[in-house]
Image (cartoon, rainbow, N blue to C red; front, side, top):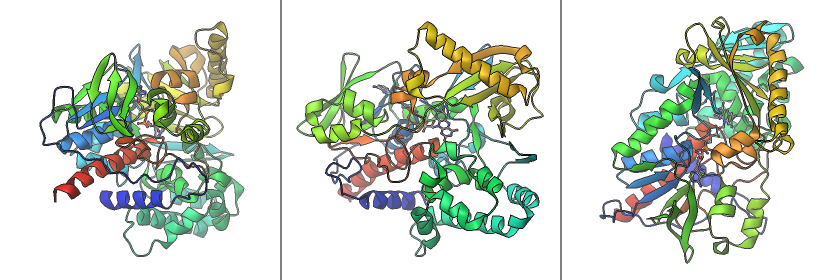
Length: 500
Ligand SMILES: Cc1cc2nc3c(=O)[nH]c(=O)nc-3n(C[C@H](O)[C@H](O)[C@H](O)COP(=O)(O)OP(=O)(O)OC[C@H]3O[C@@H](n4cnc5c(N)ncnc54)[C@H](O)[C@@H]3O)c2cc1C
């Protein structure tokens, strides 16, 4: 299954339109020689990975497990990137990702099985409560609980609900088995927008709005979202559930780090890569903290803009390509208000949506808060351009204003919460940018609207790969894990082909 998905992904790349003179998504044909068996000098590696987010960790773990000598360099003091956590006064708060798809039959499920890891050790199923109008439903999405409740709430749409869920399930199953001769349903979802699909099945606007409630996970409008993208990134949560990554993903990130290390690889933390070293169009290594590390394969997990504009010598790239990269629009960002409260909120679901949306990490992962307390987070609209520079009085005021807004919204669902705060912390798009070097603190790297292009996973510099939310399949932890798999598979399969 995993292999067939990769074949389909690579085919998808090759179909990308070549109309523009510089198309960052254009397929690169190079293959790179690698020989994990050949003995290496101390500072020489089979593959160097720049960044310890899930794209980097996935490719690193798979390569290390296949015998490659791997070096992963991460600028922060921990791995995980946007999918990890921090601790304040005994409360654990995720840095970013909190609701993960694909933990069963999707990308993460496949990675877990390839590495012989158990889902339960790293992920906890969310329970979700949605309040809309005078209606309220609670479900996990792992069985028919959602279909049944929606059918009761919208009896006139009952048959359409059943048909929509059945068609979505069929399309997703075709996507994950691309060698199947009849991929007609998935192909139709690739051609339509999500809004068109909803309009095809439903009349009721409130129901359509509910089915768009996770569209923020892709960061686009329903009428600009390719329906098949919405299937993976939003709708799959209604079909297969969504999972909280325990400790905000830190446990899983540390497990992947251990896979690399236990297979002879090295992970260096607090190590910012300053330069990608290139010679005559080929990557030859990296420079970090005055050290030079050599390899003919470098996998960039750092964002593609950061990579091409700051780390690769500019003379190594076509100025038109650099311009095209510079002009890529970033996806949306967010601010997050994190709260540690001395209240027992265990009667609520771990994900609450409606007039006010928030999530309670400690309801999915009780270790996230001291006993009798709760750790919760509320996302707030925030645009990078409007955030004052960090360390200015205006920045402090901006954060305080967001916290006040978040609390008055939360008071409508949790009366009195203001009087129970032990920790209050605000993450802004600037915090996100500072933490991962992601321009503008974008959630999903580049904009994911219909028709936009992402850089191909093999760059114009031979041996320099991308494995991150900058390339396909896109943003979100599951997509990023797929991008790490695509990259590792390209390297490993080529080696297999030349040694046959
Ligand atoms: C607030 C927020 C909420 C989100 N919610 C969800 C969610 O609920 N579900 C979901 O699936 N996705 C969610 N996402 C998106 C998801 O977290 C990301 O798509 C994914 O984690 C990105 O992984 P990555 O490997 O591409 O890169 P990143 O996680 O960005 O990691 C890149 C790593 O590279 C390192 N790095 C960068 N430059 C250098 C350098 N020069 N030298 C060394 N290291 C470097 C960074 O420090 C970082 O660790 C959310 C994102 C945010 C910000």
